Image (cartoon, rainbow, N blue to C red; front, side, top):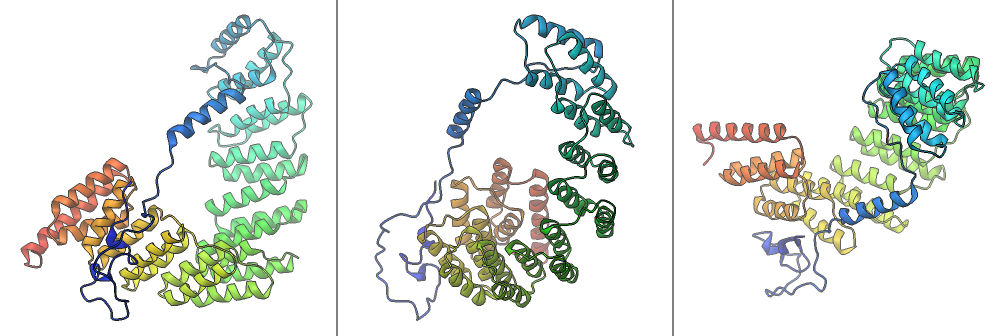
Length: 474
């Protein structure tokens, strides 16, 4: 991997290498550069090949072989013939797991009626095979993924289960709900939850919160609230702390901090005490809106309530303050978190670097990179993309090219924003060939889709051509 260029190490290289006029506050340094005791290398990528080979060895040693049967046709007659050939090939009785795998393979391409018929054929031809609840859950999961506009297939499987002595339980409800939601059938999931709650068993907290989270992503907030109220009034299913956290996170992502504050009050009235995660979620919402003072207020409220901030708390706060241009305050929290035993990570330092670059202090960001590595924290892809974007924005192209070289040697991917800024900076200086090389690297490294990469380069070249025609570029 490539080393960090010497011009990025302010402790071993005179700052004059980065600034034409070094500030007077810098200590006198020798013109002879001494190599550091421990050279700072770009973090090496973990060997994926050895890990994969180990994983394969572990799987073959510990896991049972899966069904070798792959049904290519939904034909019931063909499925019966294949199953007959299997049973005659293996003289010893096959276990439940193998039969379930065969059923799952066939039901994934067959209709519900044919899947039921195939299961009946399996039990008839193999008396040693006794289906259990998991067998029927395979059919249930597949029925939920069918393209039908109603729940007729699901009801058919549920009735089939009951007929054979398996009353739907909470696991049944969970499998059905998750399968319906994965098939984008949220309305059917709501209807089925109500039905199963009335006839058999209401969902447990995991299933309940899963569907709430799904509805928050796909439905309006009023729909979610109506669903919560209906389950509470009809089946005494009350939201818990996780439910309120999901709702608060949803409204914060929608920048509705007023509703988040109201939900915080409702949470308290319901007898729950907000935990660190709830406060972090609200703090994140304020940071999205660049409301640093309110974010600090949430932090202070946490401390008053006796809730100990965690690493996510400090990272969120430092990100929000840096993003809103309050880097000095963010730096103070960097020291506070260290005092509290939370060591800054790549997210912490990257947020600080972003803030420093935003206020035009690229050299401060580079110094922070050095401090980061000196403390044993390895920069990640986001760190380098943030620095590349900042250096090019501040017209420090040479430093940006050096950093880009480090990223290439480390096999790191370019993000869209840093790539666009880098290409534009190169074209401004008339270094079009290097801009094309950056485009080639994006394509080769699969940083993002080729169309976006080419469109960015093409628009930049059009801008350059127009600027030259107007005499605004060399």
